[in-house]
Image (cartoon, rainbow, N blue to C red; front, top):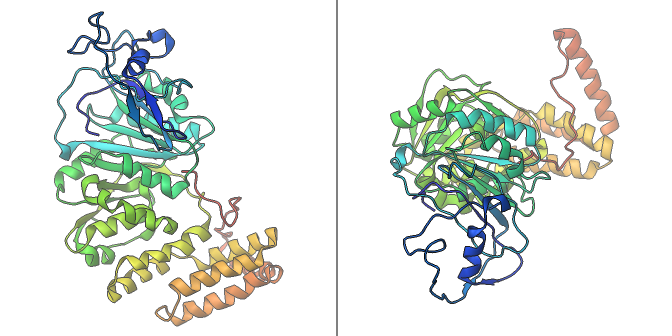
Length: 445
């Protein structure tokens, strides 16, 4: 949907039935007073709903609805007498209701920006992130929030904050059920307008005070790229690098972790969105947005690895390491070229910490008694990423670590001795942190 106006209203889609209603049912909630929770309708050119008393009879409208989301539109330029507010879906409202204000001109697509935030059950961090963003938004920018069925709806969390920024355009989409983190990230891309740039942003990452301005400047300098990977707060680049085609893109990956960190990724929606199906196909990789970008780049697409930073800090953790490490090698199927596949595998192995993974799996198998599952996971990683093309030493290390996972009591004894030796030699304790996500946990998106 293109933004031909800045609007305030509510659209509720029913999941469980075919919806039939009349146009009069559509107008009824719009005529309600603001005190009842619905804004005041604008006078239409034809004089209704607030125009002539005599209204033309309109036949019933049938809507076939099969969506899994509730939509809440919070738009700019609302009537000053009726402050911006959030609405909860009414039980008896089975229609699509949209309240429009006067149309306003929009800026060119090249300068329009959508900031998409997938969120789940982090109300305080979400409010903090949105609070940092709202003062930076331009008149045509869109803040898009995908609420993955949080216990406290995102609309309820953000309502007090949004009331202070009546000039902002905010869309909040709430799923009826939790779709999982990877799918919710893809839903952000799916809901973004095609004529905008999309900045994917985690709900727990703190942006710089001028982050939006930095994104705009970079887009202005490199309008021909379809994807920009900025530098995270813990990653330093000496300069910008533009690549053309998938082969150059893979060769230019200086940090897989930085590339996969969605909060520093900005993409041109019209170029990447056609590859949305590839993102869903590779959702198991825990890098669905990267899968879309790589598919969209093809032979001629251009991408930018930027030295500019956008974040003050970001939270680490949440995904179970096994999910990402076992699923990530499926991305090798994105390219049929043997050289590109070998380069990509090398990039993935370079940032696979086998010692951390082994320590994690030993602790989890000892705690849960699920040694067979832990061994299965390490075997999957060995087959997918440490096959004949991997360095011999790494393959031997993985076989040794497998035995520690198979016998976790023995593994804990060996790892404990190794950590004590490390502490004596370096004076530093283990970098491995405790976690409670288990073998199948995932980040809260």
